[in-house]
Image (tube, rainbow, N blue to C red):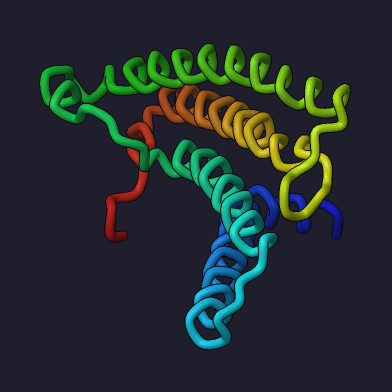
Length: 172
């Protein structure tokens, strides 16, 4: 049971989170547009909730992009290199992504600690800003997990003689 739940989270975790945050953004903006143009009244918190949900959406989406290998890349290089060596290009890209993500994760913790130390609150919701700043290290942590999974999969595929996973096309 627990293993099935973890497998489902691994397979669809980002998709579920993206759905929640996207729905939240659309719903809050829709309500705020209605309130502003029909009722001539808008809330202070609506824009803030939509903005912070969009930030979470972006960072969770970055992890989903790494998982699916749907980030922008220069595919022309793969035409110059024999297919049996494509795995090393992916490994090189994943290692570079890993280094960047670890450094960014470290530096993204500093604003959170500062916000906690100085009890920095948001303007509209009046809750600690660190709750929203956590989106960045969360996204980088999820990205690191996905990069490690990609590296393991690529090495296993290479050892088994299978072609490297190239990711999904834009409209698959």
